[in-house]
Length: 168
Image 1 (cartoon, rainbow, N blue to C red):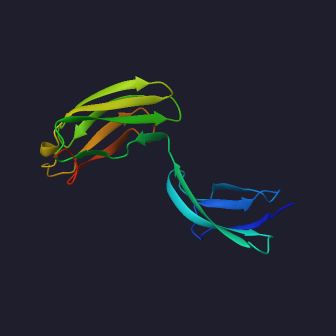
Image 2 (tube, helix red, strand yellow):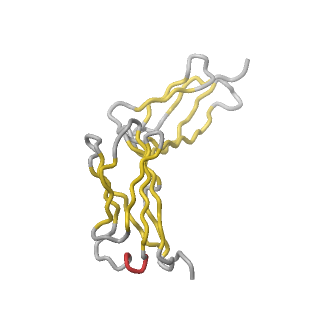
């Protein structure tokens, strides 16, 4: 009949409450009480079994849980030797929403075009990025996005110029 999972041990500050399923062949996980509902989580669980040869199994668990919005990439990057270039950011929501505006800050460092896409998505295209100009800013540059989602009316996507990247 095979080994069964009899208990699951998670770290004390685990993001998830975990327990073996009734049949002992799988586990179920849900957010632990009071844990945030979005972010990156990485833990190691210990599965205890009824098998004398393999009494425990260390099991790494990682999860990336999005909030109301999923943003990709989460950091806009270019190499410092890149020519004037473009980058695209995709923003997707759990529900229908609107991107009201997108603007480069602390001052303009590219032309932003906002296009609605299927499945609650938006494409933010930044054209005319000059990495040599942007890397000289005294304040860290970012893309400011405004939406009609309560609690997420305004969020920022950081911009980074990689010192060892780009064309030579």
